[in-house]
Every structure is written in C-alpha cells, then in structure tokens.
Amino acid sequence: MRVRISSDAAGSISLTPVVVRDLTREELMEHIVSVCGKDPARIHEVVSRGTLVSGGSRLRWDGFELQPPELTLMLSRFPDPDPGRVFSADRCGLAVLRGGAHQIAVPREAAARRRLFRRRSFWDHLLALGARAAYVDYSYREKADIYRSHISPADQLKLQEASRLLTYTALTRQLEGIPLESVDLYVSR
Image 1 (cartoon, rainbow, N blue to C red):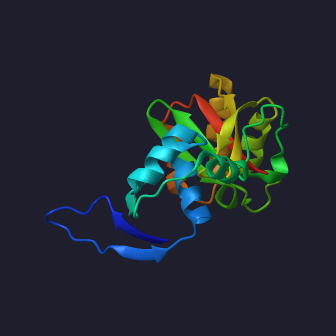
Image 2 (image 1 turned 60 degrees about the vertical axis):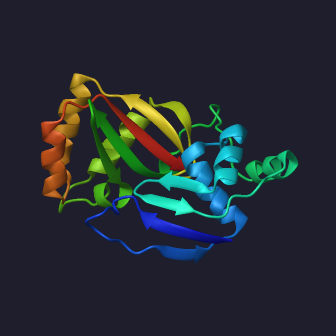
C-alpha cells in the first residue's frame, strides 16, 4: 500500500518533501492504533478516510473499506491493557516525570549511568517509585504498559538530590525547576 508522509509543519513559506513509502496493511494499522487505540469505529473511519496525523507527520493513502471480521482479526494482534500485570523493573525502559503542564522523558540509557564511585544511579531512584506504582493503561505508541506513581514532596527532594547523579546537566536543571507530581514508568511486554 502506497502511503504519502509529509510534515505537518509544511506551509506556504516552508516546503518539506513528501515521502512515499510502501507499507503493508499491518504496518499501517500499527500507526493507526498508536494514535486511535483499539477503537473499531474510529479506526474504520480513519482507514476509509485515508488520512492520519501522527505526531508531526501526516500520513495519506487511498482510503479503503475494512470488513468487521477483518478489522477484528487485525486488532486481535495488538495487546489489550491488563491491570493485573505486575510492575517489572527489568523491562522498564522509559520514565516520564510529570509536573503541571511539563513532561520530562527519561530513557533508561540516560538515567542508568552511574557516576564514578556511586552505587546507585538516578534510574535506581526512579525504579524505587515503581514499587508502589499502579497500572494505568497500555501505550500502543510505546508498545509498553504504563504504571504511575505519585510523587510526594519528600520524593521530590530525593529525586532532586539523586538528579545530581545524572551525567546530563540539562536534565538535572529541568528536574530542579519543575514541581513534580507523578512519574509514569513504561514496561515493555
């Protein structure tokens, strides 16, 4: 299936190229589900309309009809949210710290580095909050279960102190300037 991908930033002043890619229906469905979730009515509308805005990109294709059995079969390949899943620190790869309108994404690779002669990393401090995290939902975009832990004022102080363990000083400055409310931990299946 031929899909045209353009930047949503394209306007009358700036021109961005339109990329044409060949995607299978399953690959296109991954894009659609990451935006719409597993809502059959909404997915049917997007597929037949032939357009989807995902992040800063607009995807366009020749719309087509999906019969309900075919749509059900395609959606069955995607996992469902499972509130009974237990938090697994080993499979956690991303933390998103939230405070007001601010969100700070902290990937495991950036936060797990340890400074010289330090036993714990900033990531270890984030995972300690995961022990009391509650299941929220499944993210089709990140392909991971989301667990949320609320941050108390005492937790905020601990995280600000622990942020000095980060090798990225810009991230440390961000964490010091935002009153944190919660952390979302993304755990892949």
